[in-house]
Length: 130
Image (tube, rainbow, N blue to C red; front, side, top):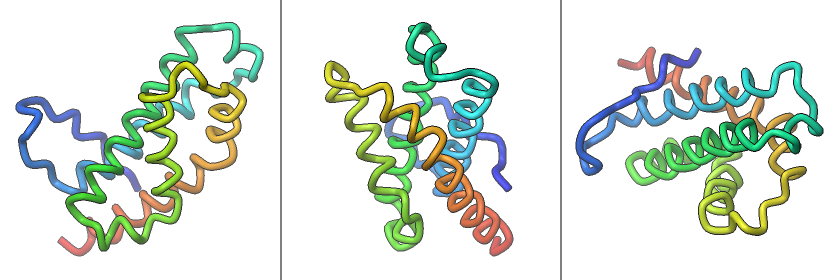
């Protein structure tokens, strides 16, 4: 089960609880899932705000996983979809001119459910260990 995201405010350099990074991942995936529910690829292509919202949440997923991997590399290694999620974030940030919208759309439907399941399972395990 994913807790509500951390929505942490404050200094960029403030310490972040590794569980909060995972909660942020779950929350961002939940937002993406809600954004795309009942909509198709044509709607995605036609609506810049829709695409921007989905892409922003992908950026959060990738950044939160990057920070989690830095703070808890042994735990991060247990998330099989971590490298492609971080790569998607990097592509969105650094390769925005060459984005392939179909790739993003397919990732939403084919990869995010499994990533969320992996992160939620790890959150449950770590939460119960406290």
